[in-house]
Length: 207
Image (cartoon, rainbow, N blue to C red):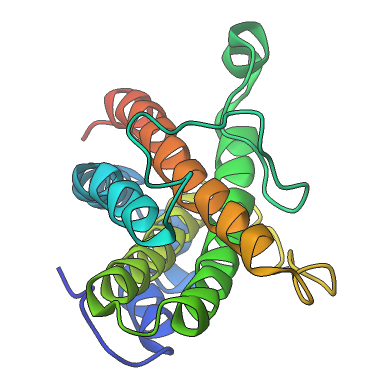
């Protein structure tokens, strides 16, 4: 699995490796890219709790206090992973994949922002910075896998958007810590959702 690379453009390289050529999309079964995406999502899921714990540990009180949780904190620029069962159950494959694409695109951008914030707030925390960087690269890799799935299914890939805009800058240290908490928490929630939904796709399109 070629994920642990040190160049910011490595996500683009991985996307190229995992995405099938557009000219042969019609003849490609979605089973292989779905299996690749599912395997990557499972690998990501093993590390999400550790990332959140490490993040909270470095932020100080109240974040590092035992049992800290603030589910009421949200970011308008980051879609929540939670959904009503009826709404989720009514989604078709294209709708779910589009939602997941937009969510993980937003997560890659937000994780970069959190990494920049922590480089400023906690410059002596190489473990945290490395975990944030690895999470961002894995999210980019999952984006590439999902693009390959959508191509194989003949679905349009949502255009890349700037989900941060101008509102991401000029925040206080506490606001940046809160923002990072929401991002690392939602990264875990979206990864859990991806594992669940990709397992359903895997069963549906098994070779």
